[in-house]
Length: 112
Image (cartoon, rainbow, N blue to C red; front, side):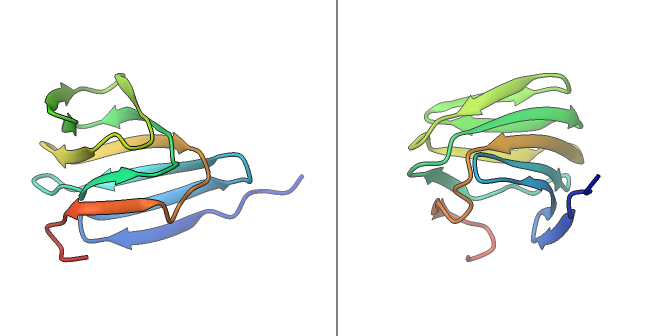
């Protein structure tokens, strides 16, 4: 049996834990610190589903905002403008198509 390599990627808002990197899909856990947020962004090709493991987040998708609690899930389709903001320390399970470099940032608190 071959175990997958797990990769830890530090981010200004916390970190990503990459646990699956396959041709067809990618699996990550996003650890987002309270009062931080990810870029306002969209993807040209990437489709992703987020499942909140713990904490509380505010998710902006298009012109709508929703408070997401543990156990809730949402899918982001290509070209959906979205942003995650942590209201509490949060852990998000993300499964997506393998288009990792496919982010277009519209706003970013960290000047990336």
